[in-house]
Amino acid sequence: MDLSSLLADLEALRDEMIRTRRDLHQHPELGFQERRTAGIIAARLSAAGLEVRTGVAHTGVLGVLRGGQPGPGLLLRADMDALPVQEENDLPFRSQTPGVMHACGHDTHVAVALAVAQTLARHRDALPGTITFAFQPAEEIISGARPMIEQGALDNPPVQATLAFHVTTELPVGQVSARAGAIMASADRFEIVVRGTGGHGAYPHRSVDPILVGSEIVVALQLLVSREVNPIDPAVVTIGMFHAGTAFNIIPPEARLAGTLRTLDQELRARLQQRIGELASGIAASLRAQAEVAFDVGCPPVVNDPAMAALVRRAALAVVGEAGTVEREPQMGADDMALFLEARPGCYFFVGGANPPYVPSGPHHSPQFGVDEASLPIAAEVLLRAAVEHQERGGAKRTG
Image (cartoon, rainbow, N blue to C red):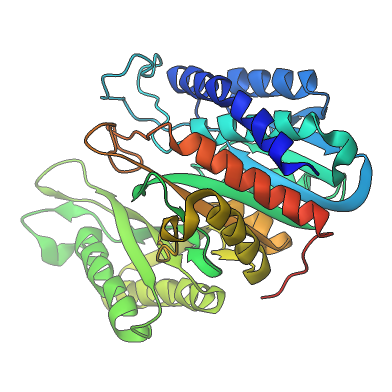
């Protein structure tokens, strides 16, 4: 393919890409509610001549670009949901939806993926193979990738590899990170219900206090990481909810706790799931209570294939040079892109979007989150270059 012509067409879409991002930012939608967003995506893909399928995983969109030359199948994923956050940035395109905000950059992901799709569509005759553009709902609640896969995102047409990116305010504009191996953690939610015996707060000996039992469990769970996990293996056990009681002088009959488990290793993930249940039940029994533990299994760690990570690094070197091509440390945050990568080799890379004090660059999921829009053309070019090289080389086999 004529790379210079591709890049010229991509550059011609720069202003439209930014306008798209700003429009989506003004009209954010929560997971499985992205109807307006999906409508815009479907219309753009249809206008570019892609085969479009809507309603995938409720509100997801698949766009298939069939090249004019034989070649492999590649999937490019962009998540599109927003967060229940009230924006505090004073921007002309700030969110117009009360209590909802693109506080993680998914608006940029959609805008970039659309620009790449439109560019490649103009060169379809020279494109080897097929490229599926998957616009995924509900990433923020770890619920969109699995049903998209179950509904054929990787099979119709067949996909051999996957690519995606995430803009981040933890890297400055002009940096790109594509690291092999585990780069983000698994994410599982668990709930613990402690059942005791309610009674008067003045006579605790006549009751079994579930608040006390729950407190002991909270403290003991931290021992799993500090004393049962190898110090060089990252793991997080966090209790984020503890609900019990109706009055200051009443011992309630029940306490409910909920938390999250994060690891970078599947074996450790399974072992800690088992140990959380054993520890909670054992502590409760020792204090004359009962504890029931239920896991809502989320997603595995995000693991990049070495060959696909090398592919993206080559693209990054061409765009931001050696100084801008970095290796970000693994993060304990999670992303259900992990499920696409578990099914097919691929790479999930990060594009720097921070530029303080000129652009709001609060942390992800905060009311002050913002990215420098100079990151959009960087992300688009890296994604385009990586996709083209993958197709022209005939694909990549899983190497890790």
